[in-house]
Image (cartoon, rainbow, N blue to C red; front, side, top):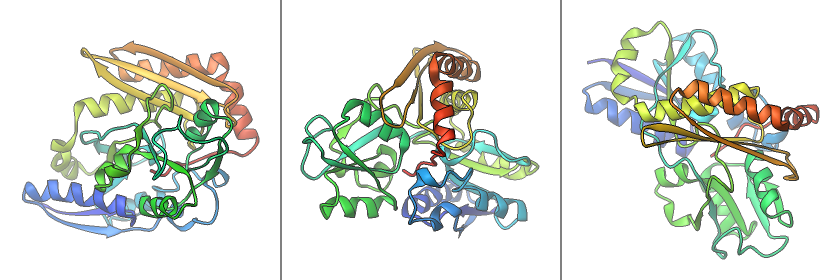
Length: 311
């Protein structure tokens, strides 16, 4: 069996993900070690992510470690990866996906609808903020950085009435008790690839690719390929207020897509079904752009608002 070196960010959630993959590989008899690599996104903690807008800010240092041969594979949250990978890399496996939806967390209130007027809500995501403002324009929505534990501590300390997080992160860390409301994708559409992991390798490394093949989940790969095709059709790059969720129903893919003005005053939604993931994603993305998404995104970029999401 092989000796495999995994590159991972150092957050609690990233290490859970790396250890999960490590455990699966060890079950196959491989010897595995994890190297923690600090990324740009981990180091910039005093600036709202919407003001940073660095492409690949949670991934490029991991890719450099791959290129240098320090690690054999990198474990990412798929939504952190740009829609077009850097030359020389590939996604070798997308394991079975966790719940892709967003969730409402509050120690006092049961749901978004139950929040009082002007309640203070924390989120790291312009995508979540835009859709939340469309639903509740009265809320005071403020940036919230840090790992999952940090954000929950701030909530518990009373700095926020509620926070919006990804269900996947809470489930993986054993903190599902914080989930007060699972938010319907019709209300807040998740980020493309949310809840999925991506295992990245050097494209020339056929040996590691072969070792990782058993981890690849057909349904997760199809759904996320569809979502990322939508994102790519709309410009890809930095994460802007775009949501995409593809699910398989009766053997066919059903895709929901959304693009919204950051202030929530205009939200465009589109859905469709199809059999070809990339074709479906591209089609829905193009429809959203023709329906006014191009103007929304032009405004976002013109004002320098671009965002890489955290969990």
